[in-house]
Image (cartoon, rainbow, N blue to C red; front, side, top):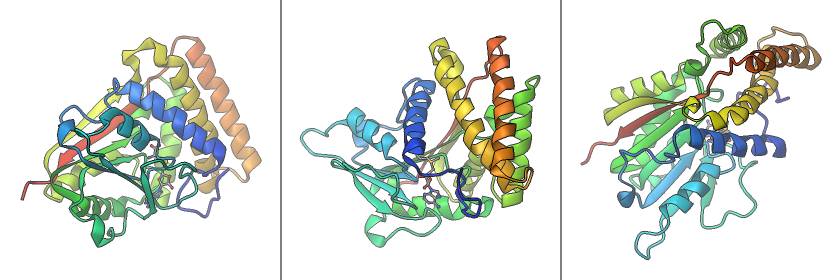
Length: 280
Ligand SMILES: C[S@@+](CC[C@H](N)C(=O)[O-])C[C@H]1O[C@@H](n2cnc3c(N)ncnc32)[C@H](O)[C@@H]1O
């Protein structure tokens, strides 16, 4: 389990990296394979940044999707507050350690046509979204796009599902106690509008468009209960120690699997905010 003193809730072990990569495949399929949102003109995307990149899996797939522009290589840069999950073989992708809540070095200003961010809900404070959105604005070229994706409270807001009601209760109270924001995508939308981005939209994608995604979705929720749910129980003092957290998480997983067995298998929802920096 992760260190309860660290602001970031997840660990960064090899196993966690594998989980991130598996989750990436599911999320891309959930969005009907729209790695880059269809309103973003791919032919104009020459330089791409992924912030809070983790293992860089989104960047690697995006590089494959976009290929070359005529014969010119596109530019890809991954940033993360920690280098622990950066890949050993970085290929043509640059990686740097950087905290999204701090301004980027000047060499990155006005550099990117597309900036991608995914899954910071358990990492940054509610008051830090404003700085994050402003820092991204600074590194986007005029006319460049932000695509920010989160699994947040929308996924867990399900009536008549006692397991999701319990997850929602635990996440909401623990995030509030830590100053984080469970309504992450709504917060990103609000800060993008306040920062003067144009064409700001918030969209919801759901894995239930394809029944074949059910086993991966169920495995993902088991992983979320094992990791995030158990960590938050402990961090917020709802249980006394790791053993008690694992036990409570294990019981919830059993209940969740029973519900799934009875045909009540909730989809994962990915919230996506797309926004454009105004042209000069
Ligand atoms: C749940 S992982 C998501 C990784 C990746 N975006 C993905 O979707 O596969 C969250 C990542 O955010 C990074 N992170 C946490 N706080 C950050 C911050 N303030 N600035 C930049 N990265 C941060 C963590 O180190 C971790 O790699």
